[in-house]
Image (cartoon, rainbow, N blue to C red):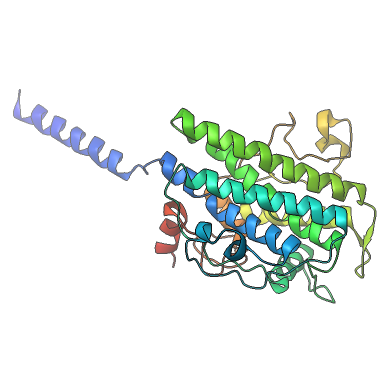
Length: 299
């Protein structure tokens, strides 16, 4: 081989190697299965505290793995039906934690902020101004359902996004099973709120339907991934087949569930719009390889 040709070959090979090294490595099944533990911890603790007045430290301390106790969680003022529904959700979330941890190593519960102030800040952001008095998620059925609207849907979009990236059948089966129940929880919450969509939330004089619309718009804004969230009532063109304004289940133009990336989810649950900047429900950040990789590269 001529010297100049040999040099070109070496140069091209170097460029290929450099390009491959620069290309980000796709997340492993382990990473993709660990990441949702953050949302499952959040849901489990919120539903347990709301229905029982205590969390994993009482009902399943082994699952917390010594992680810090949540901030501000408390028993909600719920009627018998709503308390029953939320308690069912709570035990389902405990099961989800066990299911994931039986497949991957997992990590201890991260610090969670379930305080009324945390939810009030999210609602204030959705309305673009402070509500007076501050929104209290634990005050009554409607407030608790609206607070619940904030959480499970984000997790289910994450499962939709993760599923096509998973490499083995065991991982896909687990995520499909988790997605089935998470989407069911979201459907129940949305159905209960849809039944109350015209009800004015006391003392703000704003309907339940408008609350959900503002929360969904906030999540779209924070996620920075386009339209992936819809309230209970939409324009007819956004409704199923462009035929109806009622929107008891959110979906795209084909009524297929939206997908979110881990980055989009972190931007939302941190309430910062930035996966590098923790806050919101995760004051010290989420755990697992995907989440901590962004914290390590924060400004």
